[in-house]
Length: 243
Image 1 (cartoon, rainbow, N blue to C red):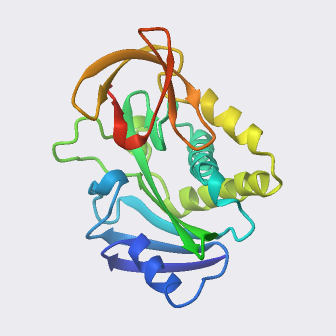
Image 2 (cartoon, rainbow, N blue to C red):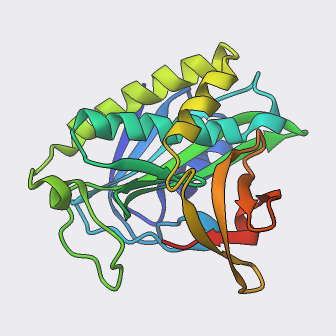
């Protein structure tokens, strides 16, 4: 494992992408920044992290033999790795909010952004970025954000937290690379936020509707049992789960 530690960078994912544009890094090349000036989340959202108080990390995972059609399994494996690492640190009421936010009860403590490296229609690897709120205490205009420290009252050693996440990441990628995909999917679905509970959703045309999350498809679409007793599938851009 090769770890690059930076004081400040625009985005750890962008830093790794620049390396990838020249040559593929070693497997499990890790970039850690104390401060990220242009951190990114899902759908182009900005990721807010207080300097020195959070983990802003990107990992390059080589996946040259992985089927590009099953890329959502990468997201599931990473979600589970961070989920299990946080369990080790006794973070309460953990859940995975589709597709890959990590929650404690109904507050968000970690976001994940995965950018796959594809050449000639073949998957070469993944740049796995995550922002984990570790010791941050204040969040501007983000009422649904929290941190490990706010949840438990403990000040954490960020290196210890990162080490556990990387350990769990290796564990889950070993399962993936042994082609035991069903195990990953079943475990991921078992931890889904609001699974099997009546929930409210908002569609891309701003209409609200009720439904019950059943699980996900192999390609990562959310399966929702709707009021007309039909299980419908939704892409990330098509629907938002309201808290």
